[in-house]
Image 1 (cartoon, rainbow, N blue to C red):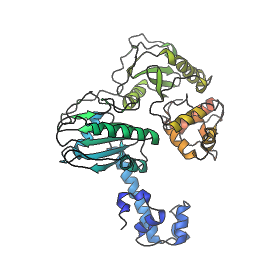
Image 2 (cartoon, helix red, strand yellow; image 1 turned 180 degrees about the vertical axis):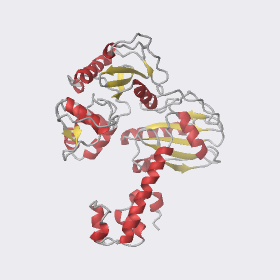
Image 3 (cartoon, rainbow, N blue to C red; image 1 turned 120 degrees about the vertical axis):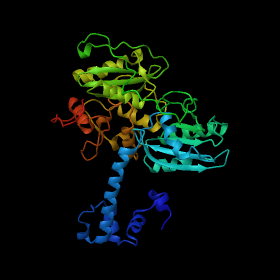
Image 4 (cartoon, rainbow, N blue to C red; image 1 turned 45 degrees about the vertical axis):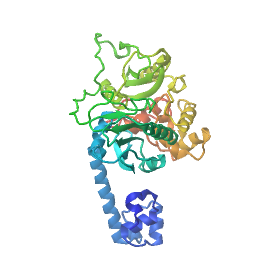
Length: 433
């Protein structure tokens, strides 16, 4: 058997994978059908060997079941403490240094976990290519790296600092950011984010801060949205309600905007906009999403630099007027790949009531061959509506994708609000706006 089948199956050709499944070479017409995307159902009628069809169908069903089980069993690594607890069972008691890579999906859940290197009692050598090869093949949104210090002391060495900086730089170039580098000791861990070696607003950090025991029983997590003081103001109409929060300064903070189409959130630091959280019907759900994405953010008053953006979003969501994409906004571009910044800038030139395909947007940004990469940029857009990813549609007239709450139903409603498409009946279970 080809050893790459269980090490790196993604590098094998379709023909090699089919041979591995069936145990022998496949006929050329079967290979042509497979590469053309012909459905497996009914394949025997087109001359496919029934045994091969059965194996492929069985494999597909097994993979579906496996993915469903993974979805329910994968933890969310929303802080360095979560990472330390998760990884300590894997590398915490090793007698040599082991460098572990955790590839994450957009919800900070592990997609793949693998060793990038294994060293001696005092060191392990790791190269970025060994780290990012598996991460890229897994289709990860981001990654966390972990390694242990067999001595029991998790204090980072100079090599640890150099490796962290290199991985952070490579991740920014590839558009797969390094979220944290956690070093495990005997009963403590160190987060390189907290030490300042992984800068950027998209990072996660320790829930408790500093270094702490990974063997202690974790404290009960606060409920979603905890830390948001309830308003003591008497009930007032939604649009008139004002939240009184302290100024934020250089710390990461958020502000909630309440509209007729739900509550949205702006996350910011030093007057620059880090993220826009798409409106949801319940403010509690938005607060929970802020806590998941930005655990260190606290409720703050809105900076003067963002008042224009907040006003434009409210008028758009409340009254259906204006175009927030045309509003000047001080975006925080730290950690955003250069290609994504180019695409977002081009997309902000697409006016209200119009749409653009992925391929057309790539051409406008001067990257005519990067239509597929445009889709990745849309999925990772941190500023929906202000960067109007809902205006990007498929080349065949379809809606394309939309990852915000409510999915395609929300996308259709925004396009209908702008007059780009005819309004449609609401779908069951869809979110606001």
